[in-house]
Structures are given as structure tokens and as C-alpha cells.
Length: 130
Image (cartoon, rainbow, N blue to C red; front, side, top):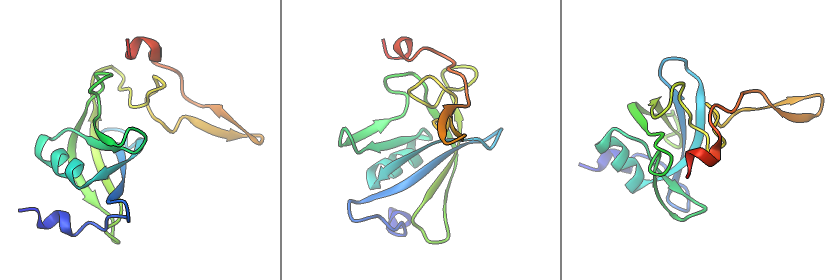
């Protein structure tokens, strides 16, 4: 039953990098990590569950913010060491994937030797986590 999990090349900490890509737009919304349990739960629930390295625990995306990720497909790259989730970002329209209140975590753009925000804040993060 879990043989598909055995095919993943987990790193020395038992983690695999994961990219969450929006189904409709193709936007890359975020990068995170999963351990074996998180990937199994994601496949079982149809909602993204990650492993938080900073908190050292499972993190069901949206458990605090309400911004859940509905998973449409789970893919793995040719080296079996990166997972790609195709998702719909739920909980706000337009979807908010980033804890900063933006659509994507990849909102900073390098311009003239400095990083600047290239996407607006859709919702004040203080109101997301109150």
C-alpha cells in the first residue's frame, strides 16, 4: 500500500521538497517540505499537508489561516526527489498562499540590485491570523 512512498528519494532528514502550483494559472504559489507522513496524508485527504522544519511538526496548510489547498494531482520529477502538487488555493478570492497575505510566496522581484515586492498584499496578515 505504501510502496509508492518508498519510491521517493527522501533526504537525510526524511524530507522531500514540494512545489505547489495553481491549477488554473500555472502560478508557482509556494515551496515547502514533506515527510513521509505528510505526503501520505496529502494523498489520502486531497488537501496539502506539509512538514514545518521551523516547528518540527506536520502542518495542514490552512489550519490557522483558513487558506487550504485542494490537491488535484501529485507528481514527482524524473529523479524522484521533488514533488509537484497541482492545487486550488481556497479560503480567499483571489487565493492567498503566502503568510504575508499575498497570492504567491514568490512575490519578490530583483530590480536594480534590490528585491522589491511585485505582488500586492491581498489581506493584512494580522487579520489572517487573529
